[in-house]
View 1 (cartoon, chains in turn brown, purple):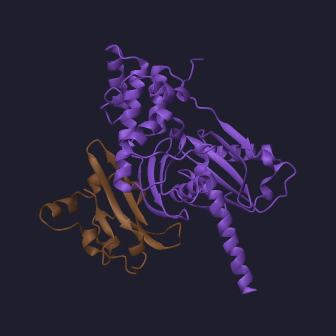
View 2: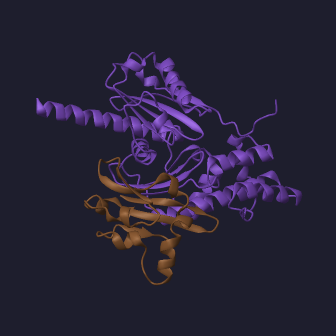
View 3: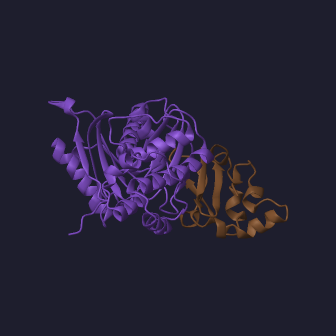
Length: 94
Length: 294
């Protein structure tokens, strides 16, 4: 399943996409540790698969919470979560 | 008391084909939304009754009240229900739920039940959020994208405009179509600013119908963006309260070049209905497992 966590407001589309079909095969979930803002949490989804999700309190604040990594992106490096994911399951839409 | 134009009517329904019916396995779904609460009762996956009420200040009371309505219609009691699923934004507040499931999974399953296995894209337009869901032929979610950051593109936004213009919310859709030519959409994303913009347009001499058309168009454009970002595959269906607003539905259809599937069911029950279906499936799986281990 492709889960898009985030929002759209007047300034743009801010979503983190998690491909849970890939994510559930990952035992380590290194993204949880890698994220400097601590956005990720491991959960059991509705289909009983162990996946990561974006914490509820952060879902509507991604634009601010991801600033550190957006600065990295400007320097040509991908966000830390995307870099840490061994299964290419994470993507930012902005 | 001042007239409240935003107040949509609560509904309840009992299946008339079930006179003298044989009770099967009864499962229930309770969907506590930000604005409305629904309870749906199924007997062996056949729809028995449902109720849709406004969510009050207390979600637990709303869950009880919706369920009580269903019990009043059917003469059943809580003890008769084999499994209850709580869903929606207030799902943790269903005290009698055996399991909670997110509304996204439930809406996909509910739409699959209502519209059949050909439905692939579901747009749920709720009271305070909006979700685009893409599902497979079994009603399992393939992808979803939701927006609950602001009230634009939701039922609450429509309620605000209904009150502002003094047009009963049920009439907005029809009246928004009574314009010769669609005016340009409201430009403000935010409902609070949209109110200011509407006030300005009224002073400029726009008719209520023109303003409603502009607002419905703005809402349609906003959710169309969400649909395009997620994935738009036919067949397409709209659930939630705004599905009853023909002005928004027609404009989404035009923007997306699709036709939305029609149904006799109340579009607001999809989440609770999906919950009850998933509850039944879960119960069957458990029974099967128990039989295997015997």
